[in-house]
Length: 244
Picture 1 (cartoon, rainbow, N blue to C red):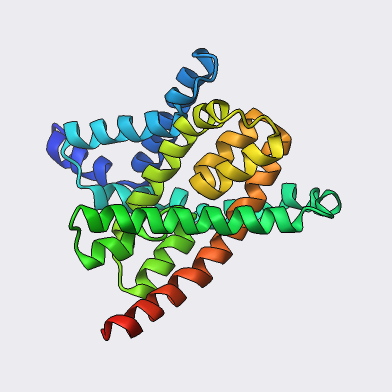
Picture 2: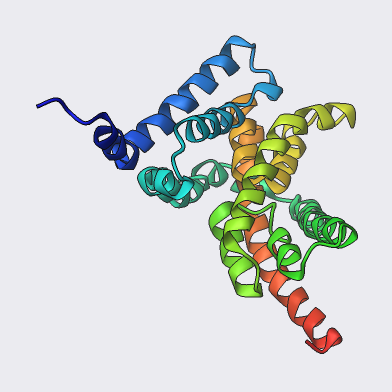
């Protein structure tokens, strides 16, 4: 009996192994292109992988949630990967003496700017309240950002998309902006990438310089804590003043 191609395709499209394999292959292709280009920021592997997966889903007409069910193991690894960033941070503890005030100031300004700029731009574009709340934690790593969005009444799924876009854009244009601003110290460059572009920016910083990667790892953790504390408090104050 001849196999029914449609039935075989339905099985393969819903198979976890297929979605996971497609994700890994897309990233490997992106990384190959990135390496061959001389590690140009514009050809970020994550950006290329996202574009490839998008094209595959569009051409094959596979529903995103069907794909996500198969590739969710990669999503699960976000948590352990974030925790693993503590390893490079541990090497910084002794060298941070005398720098706590500068780090605290940079963290406060970076976290505040990331949240406020997103909210202000969304408000100017007449976005809905739920959309505004979803955009506020966009510069924090995905698991924390989704938790914050859910807590304040945003859409975690929209927040996740915004977080990924923020990370990709930050990883692509971050080095150019830092060069334009003539910021040459690896600790400052790494910390800025970690605060502004969370995990993807941190991965980019690690690829460029170990010291930058360590400071970016520190920044992503501190920014997660600071944003998780500030945004719910700011939201509660806003509700109190608005009488909502």
